[in-house]
Image (cartoon, rainbow, N blue to C red; front, side, top):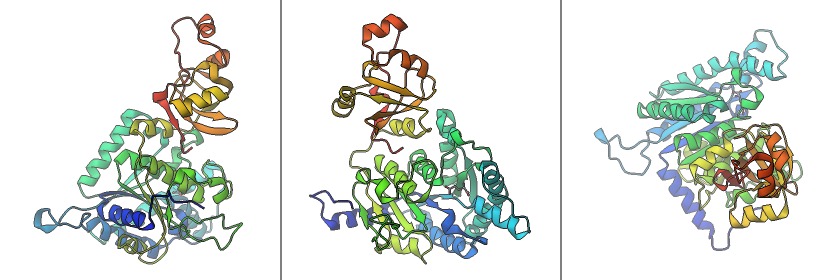
Length: 406
Ligand code: GLU
């Protein structure tokens, strides 16, 4: 269970939460398949209820003061990240008596292609009933890796939001191969928080919130009202030791919340199927889990470089290098590298490990082949192999994010 910092009174985070919800102007709301769909496919009543609540939030003034023309006042802008394409596709085919084998990447991609249109149609209808037009945005991780495409996407979101259109985002499943995948929509949503510069992240899930223990071990585990320091949570213990690779569930929700926290954005994890849940949460009712933002946000560039792709390999470092990175904010030098894993090129994102623990991620100045030649060597020894025109650092500290949520 998380302990609150000693100087923090319980009412402090309640006030922080109430103010952040009131002031939020640009919100990423993510809703999972388990909220939107059941065995029969998308639930119209859930979609309509969520659309009605989101429309109310979008149209409500975000700082309590009406100031715009005709008293319309400032509005909350919302970007919705919606799963449910695969579930909708499967259900449709099953309803037609064609129940395809829906395991494996290609089958999931094909089911998503069948279901995405239906998902979008359902959202469009539900929001139009409240006068809100929607726009479909399908992204792959690769779209955010290239700076140019990242900026293109950002400009498109800005324009849509300026027009009062609600973007409905999903992963472009049909073309996403495993190394280009976000893995899950929690990851996609956390990267969008950075892309659009959101000030709040709301994650609607089938759970009542973040539980204080793994429910398979402790069925009566209570919901944590507030997570003060998400980086200090032992996710393995709390979420049943799942890996970070596209498993979904609370593990990936907390990983996503941790990323948002790193850029100073709080996350509210809410039970998406409870009636009027968004309206109640924004009216300060105690529900779900509030994940507090970090007091010292990381630079946006570091966020981008750390999460634009999955690490392509790992470097294991020795005691001295680990200390220099953690304590002195130093760069990683060849001499501190003990072991290199993976096949990668210069510029690849690497995990930095010490005694099996992740210290962070960073961009490598060397390919795996070159790094294997110089691991453990001093500068003059490296020069003897690579010549004088080589990088002194394996990973420069400007290209290193310690404590990364990967
Ligand atoms: N893109 C998938 C879908 O629409 C969902 C992925 C996820 O839920 O994380 O079905």
